[in-house]
Amino acid sequence: MKSFLLIGLGRFGNHLAIELNELGHEVMAVDRDEKLVQEAAEYVTGAQTGDSTDREFLESLGVKNYDVCIVTISRDFQSSLETTATLKELGAKHVVSRAERDVQEKFLLRNGADEVIYPEKQMAKIAAIRYSSEDILDYVEVDGRHGIFEVRIPEKWLNKTVGQLDIRRNYNINILGLKSNGTVDVSVTPATLLTSDKTMMVLGDYKTIQKIYRI
Image (cartoon, rainbow, N blue to C red; front, side, top):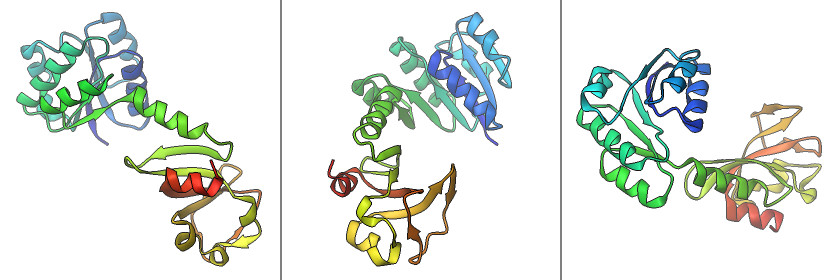
């Protein structure tokens, strides 16, 4: 379990607070809007109304005591930037800030952010890859080049074993598991038979997936 200071309770910040709470983490939620704070108070550990650009207010929250401080302020980049810089000056262990444009990401990293999240850009990439082929059922980015894909098994691979196809050598992807009826079986061996009632969870890059499925 980790402790989070979450600053900004817009739509993204609100969803993030809910997810962190459901995962069992401690969350202190902060926003200028008292109504948003009251709503969040129902599912977070603590909630306070205040101006995060006010150094004294931030200091009163004890930012050093949180494992992660996340700034999800939207539509007010100046406030986001000031909050990020002040958190770092006050000794925050790890600061994650939200960007809405590429240029914002650069400024945030230069002014104290340890990491920058870019929800719109990241979701656009995921959606573009996910819906570019009927054979790609899900996608999680690992880094700029690689991802974990849930894909249908190519027709020419059906009723053959992983060993017969020598998939890692011939196709440069790693099968992490096979999914059937919502359950993933990770005990994949060279003797594992690929059948039409399953989908594959594979680790690889998108260009490789494109070649396999001729996207």
